[in-house]
Length: 82
Image (cartoon, rainbow, N blue to C red; front, top):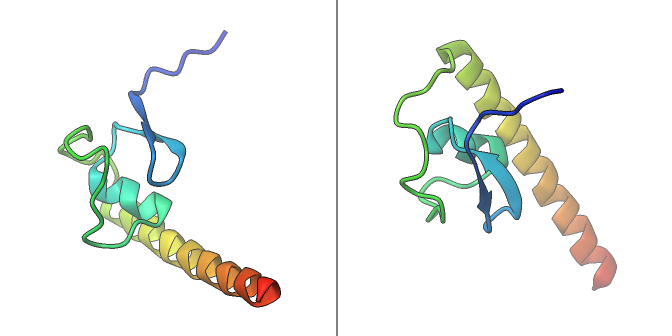
């Protein structure tokens, strides 16, 4: 049997369950939320990160890459439906 003991919450902005044991900034990077975005779960996240600086950089780079991919897919869908 497996137990998942991390706090989670439903984020309506990304329509996913997100982990609340990370900082809000880490969550935003993970889910591609832009800087200055009004987070519906603001105040629910951990105040200190358990992620190393190196890992934080990797997560930010991956999130940026995924955001670019989502934008490209959105443009293709818009072009197809137009």
